[in-house]
Length: 195
Image (cartoon, rainbow, N blue to C red; front, side, top):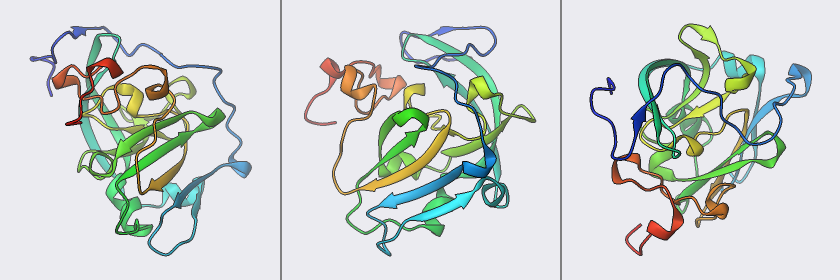
């Protein structure tokens, strides 16, 4: 997106406002890892250190970010590991339908497997050519450009493969389970059986 057309109900915001729930975590590289667990095809947990994550194949994408509060910021360039790389290295079992993205302090966001596997879904390490700032999710942030921002947790620590859906942090608190900004899916009362 270029920002020329915004999803319904969105307004353009300047810069890149910081928005999160709870404190900003302190990064300790010696204790940090990224895990993929749950219903993996091999029935095991996969784990990468920060150094190992930096060695994985990477991609760059330019996208707009949409917040469910109604603001959109445009022209973000993210660099990091495509979600497809993680799915190839740690394949889900055939019956997996959803993932839970886990972040520091137990924060979570549920996604349909198809949304996580989308071509532009990225585990970002950099923004506009620089490492992410800690306020914006350093060392790793999930970016799911086609969904509202609460589906892309900052300070990402794990991906859980699930064989049935389970609501994440904001979804349990009344936010829409799918979160498509182009469909205006902000709140759970907007859900119907088709979603």
